[in-house]
Length: 445
Image (tube, rainbow, N blue to C red; front, side):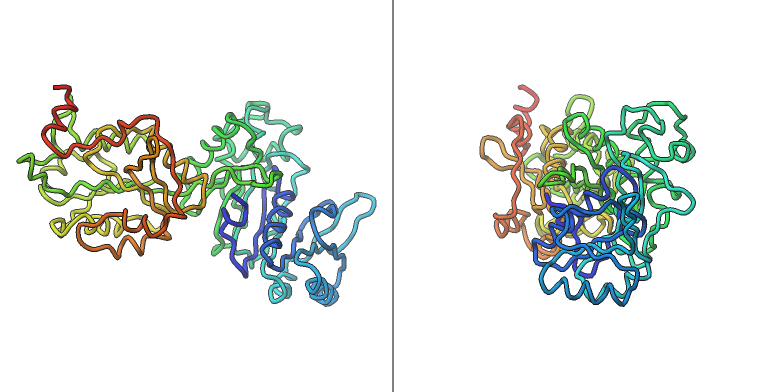
């Protein structure tokens, strides 16, 4: 994915980058992506940066007068789409001194997006801000705290971290100790860390940069999962390497699992959800798999025999009773979506009669969602599609419009070009229990 897609940047945004581990590269990468869409983009800083290369920007404007800056930017946009603006050129240091944050207000009518590097880090992968940092414009609508995953496994010293004593103070990690993924999460969470000075109304999307292999990806995933659980202010967490043409490897977003368990099971003569499986039941085995996938919210939709089934639902699950369950599965889909948390960006619909589903299979579906901007993720086995299916929030209105005994396949059929398929390791995940014969085969009888 490209940065602008994963960040969901829209026109009128002021994007501020803070932290360490690739802010400047991320700023220019984002600027180039937006300029390629035909947007007018200003990249700038409120601190200091090195002069950009010709590959990083189309034009460099240096002036310490706002009036002059506005004229030059406007003239530049007649020819180009990406302009870098600074107030002073510091020849001895080979750096550019940034603009006054108040200039942003004057620049807004000229640009579609303004991108600001609002922090310095001496090129190191990790930092904690000093008392005078960061310098975030109050017009910021999107704050991107950056951390470099390459710091994990290294020692907390000045050679690795900018202001390591501040990092130690905020995270509890002693100087000289090994930096862990939890250290990065601690910086992202602390009010005097990466979120220091965040404007109240700004969206917050951290970027875990320098993901280059399976080891750094695993560590970055840990940071993303912990950050999303710990702070509702964080909208999503991007994992990637901004020096690449496709910078974002995964975009971690909050996902709710909606387990559909409202049916009557007339062919069994008793609630199918409570069929014994070893020392457990069918519904408990499915819920155990969902909980192992570490979704952000777990909703169980009950209907027929709700009180009886509810006794076997473990703590931590949100139970909703669908009073209209007899009208068909669409009513259960609507009932589940009604209680999905506002911060959740997708719903994974799991059927309560799929005992072959595993936490591993569900994590494969989630990771496929994180790795794409497509709004639907469908598991497959040798080209055959099955359930569970994940739908992004962008499609919730269409799901809520369904009526009768109609499931998500109708919505899926309307968006075939927006479907991401993910291959499962075994067809066992598609096993469902519709008849007594299915149940007997499941028991090995």
